[in-house]
Image 1 (cartoon, helix red, strand yellow):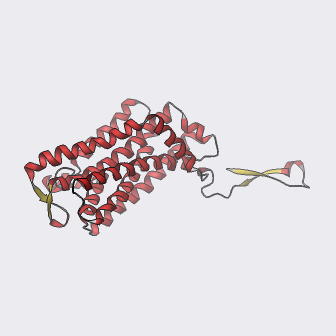
Image 2 (cartoon, one colour):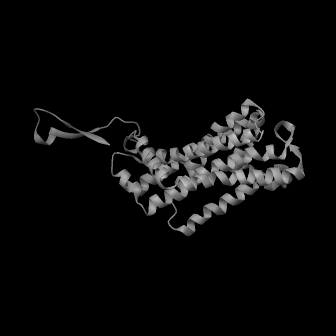
Length: 283
């Protein structure tokens, strides 16, 4: 945005002129992300709290069904660092990563799709002083808050079930937020291309196989070598492995690679989302 400045003794043509605002990123960012977040929190609390609760319950039910039911038949498996751990302790961090992904994806896809194509909310926001980066950061922050809420609750349940055996496991909460950030930043940008509900079904079509095959329930070694390379390119696999290492306090060079993967994903997602909002509404 720009501001208008006056000059006392000049001609009428020079009396008012546009000056650069001096803000970083110019018209892309006004520094008022909190307005987008406040509006989103108020709307969520008023209408979407039941949906938010359901997103937390689903991975807990998977943990009970697979961890306790199937786990009693499997016994122990090889965890990070080669140590033997119970099957329920093996899948719990993976389901935490899934929970962070689900919360972030829901907020950054279906919510954004409705606001973009039906409520026309972003058009109204961008008619104000808000820039596309404000809107992108605000919506992604809402997804992160949801991911943090899920991560904290799920980690508490893991503690109650005796699955927290090291203080390092508490790092799973901020790590889950990083995972949610990665998925939310890309989810919003991809959703900006969607125009129909049928197109939105592609999101579930991608998420379900990623949930089942990202070494969530089985070690990566059970798959053929060619399939392993594909799985290791998936973002959820990096989240599963990262949380699995943190849950037992095992740190290797791979830990840094997993974190770096999400940092790159976050940056690219923010660039994509901001560029799409600018192209759609600031022509």
